[in-house]
Image (cartoon, rainbow, N blue to C red; front, side):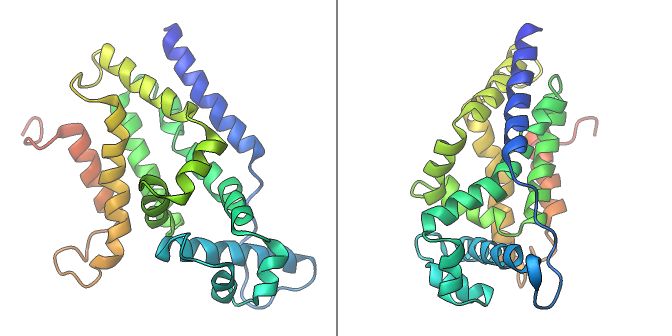
Length: 240
């Protein structure tokens, strides 16, 4: 019981710390040209959105600040006014866009400390929801975080450390010891498998629009498939 409380408190502390330091989300942009005090934040957000779109589409290493400015409809001088270097821009992206997104993925383990199936199901749906709300998320994560040479991998590690990962892996090991989860599972591979069942098809779904076999597959279908495979395996449905 004490170990369960420690795991829960570890995840909760990290989520609260991230949420406390993350800036408030910017207001939604209205059509037309911004004016007055709203113009500065509006322009900055447009540049950030353009950077995320280009980074997910062609990679961080192959994207210049000038290209981001043109994507946002600004001059390179405007880009340099807000972000002097690409490293500065990456730090802003991590603080303002990735921090809360990442902390949200730890919530299922806090809310379901004694129910691994509910926690994993909720986590899958949170990943799909994040991809729906932020279309750049799957491609960028696959390209720049999961891959060996991803630019964001090291920066994310430096910024957040591995407490989140250790706590989640500890929860999986505890569930196995308590007989709540398949003892044959390798905890260190659990999240790799989960990400493979969600982020990879979400990132690839853009290519399926003209594929008659997959054109009807979206986030809901990907989530349902991932949950079914993770919780029931390849055998027939229990009770069938």
